[in-house]
Amino acid sequence: MTLNPWDPPAECVFQHKKKGRVPADLISICVTNYNYTQFILECLNSLVDQTHDALDLIIVDDASTDPETQATLLPWLEEHKDRFYRVSFLVNPYNQGPSFSRNVAFEYALGESVFIMDADNSLYPTALAKHYDALTRGKFPAVYCQLEEFGDRTGIGRADMWDTALMRKANYIDVMALVRRDVWQRLGGFSHIEDGWEDYDFWMKFIDNGLEPGYLPEILCRYRVHDSSRTAREALIAHERLELIMAFRHPAPKA
Image 1 (cartoon, rainbow, N blue to C red):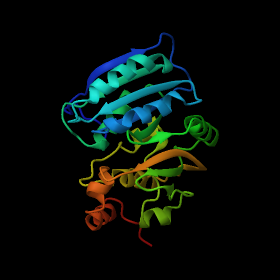
Image 2: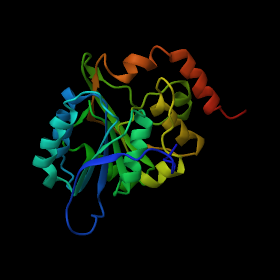
Image 3: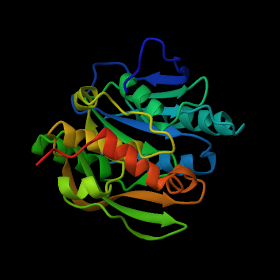
């Protein structure tokens, strides 16, 4: 769910904003981090290289236990701050999970659309420009693309055209997507699901509300496969229970 008045506010550790009005084509980027210090600079450098100029970078650290997190990020932010219209580094007071961190970024966003990614992933240079073009020209509620897997496994992701029947069987779309901020609000934001599948739950909300995201059949995003990801650590182990949770939260319509 979206943030409540009693939710603990994140601390803003670093912020820099250019003077002047907010660009009409501003994209806010939500980068969520939890102990991905060894990967996050690769992620952030891929954002510096984006061909889309107007970017609002929001990094939300979910109370990482890695003592090198801020020592790694703060010099990078100081060096690259002028690349972005605004850059913000927020830290949750205690670990809340990816759904909470994403909702923090959406609440904080200046852009009318928000691109979601975890700090262990990266983008090809034209990713944001092409997502934004598809979102605005197609007037979609959200746009996602095909992925390239790298790391412990290499290959192509499972993304495909939006199909409600297939989505009800299993999720084949990653959370790396450009989402309209007003749509996120309409859906009630991301919900915390114990042991994972918050991404699947978020896409199922699109089905519940009769919304159809657009698909870009091009490899624009890079998804890192590794043993320390939350998918590997929790979601695969709790697969059967999570299937029951999804069926309960998003029942299929009666014939």
